[in-house]
Image (cartoon, rainbow, N blue to C red; front, side, top):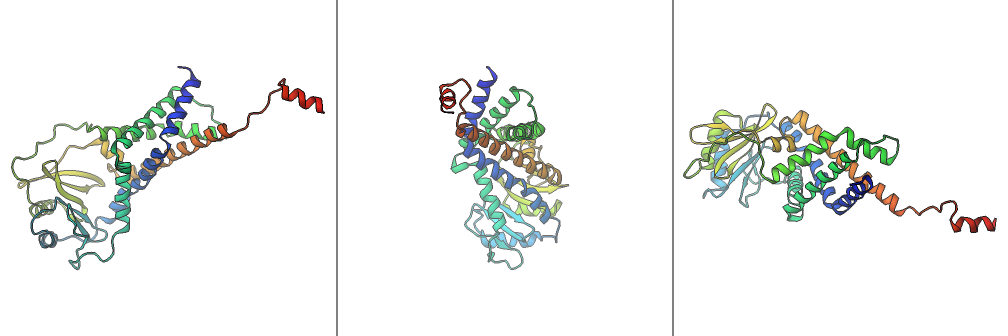
Length: 307
């Protein structure tokens, strides 16, 4: 396929998926900051496991909650799978003011993963992004100039590893590719009750470092920060065991090291937004530009005759 044909394909795929790509990249930029926000709130005053269990039993006496989220910064817990609002650990009552930042991140995550409630649209748009990037690579090295087109091409080539890795890891997550070693099977029988799981996690880890504890795929799992990395642990009646790392998720979400990966994801999102906006501007300028008459055309002859 010739370079002009590749360029047309590059442009048309971008135009078709421009709106969903903008939404996905913009929400990705918001979520890039989330690990930094989470890690800034951990490591404060210790959270008493007994207090957390007491509140869980008070607000969920029937044990219907599928999990628990802990916000160490605001000293609040939220029970997943129930209509119970966030609970203040100090007062034991429903939080009077909702956590706007947490809700903002929750909205961004839902939009990023299920755009307009359609997960397939996110997957298709991510695949289109990969194809557009590959087409740009196939078209060859650019001539860097101080023009809109030059900045577009320069941004793509100088950030290529980052902007290519981001959608590729997203596709791995969408298709369930984890590249994990053998994962311990879920224990047979009834999973550990949530209050018991909280006590088990607290026996080996500080609860202020915990993001969530809950039922995932028939097993009780805890997600907590350990050395700046968000790790997943299997929680049983006998032990809290680290699970093999899901590298595509860790890389995509920037959770392998909040202080390093989160800024890199911010740079990646800004680069992708720059590519999308400059690409659309280049197309708009070329489309809306009025064609200039070339020398030798009848219009030129007519103008020369008038003169």
